[in-house]
Length: 368
Image (cartoon, rainbow, N blue to C red):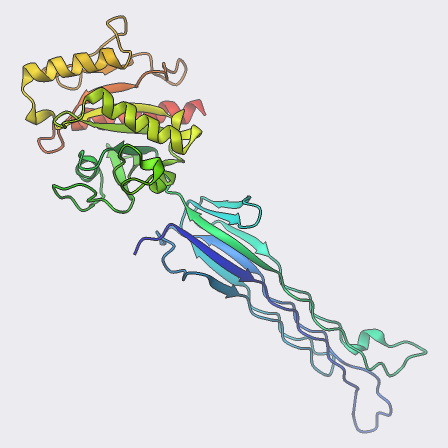
């Protein structure tokens, strides 16, 4: 079961009580107090682990407690400290305070550990309260109470490129073709019910991460379809690849405008992301019709003849890519970095698409 949001109550351990004890040995008269200190309560830690991919191991309204400190003993023996509690979370998990809504920690790196709340201090034994006027103290401190906080864990996938499109537009097919991801693929809408990550390899030493989320429809921000709850999983990405279906009954311009509007309704950050457009299912449209559709679409999204065009994906298919994009000059973010007809089924333009996306990822990495 995939879970990307959960609410928890966490409590650090209570400190152990100090001990009231007096030395009792043969031939030792009135040995005096020797009560040891109580042990410190256990802390709450969070650890980021790449081997965890979901929050489903947390139960609803779960209360996680660290171990309490042990009471001190006689002969000045201190009590054992409570064992710290380490909570394992997947990369991309945000720890949010429920009361204030503040993001307390953002767990991004594998192996990252953060101390969340500290356990209570152990109480002092009665040996600390002896004096010349009070040689038989019968008092020891109780241990301090631990802290309790209610938090929310929200997981946001970490990826370079996020796929956005209507249901059954070919997102899962594309990510399964270009990456190591193996999502469920079928000829009906909302096949993808949970986000998927895939690594796209470019040669032997270069790669980038692509994220696929369930399809979006018009009115998703109002709760239609699966809503836009899964858009949080591409909120960290700097690049969006809008998937537009050439064979759909929806007009191409209508598709891209609807998708961009839904993304903007969810997040201003996502609305300002760099983007590119892949026109899917190019294999089911005739060449003449494809030329007319693509050229007409380019004009509707503001890519006119004044912009430079290349024909490097496939010379038989028209497409647009910004030549000026590099780490120093950047590119015009008001229009897509490229528009390319593709077909995952026939592998049409898939390799050039991977390299164009990789180049865009590099431009965004160096421009940060």
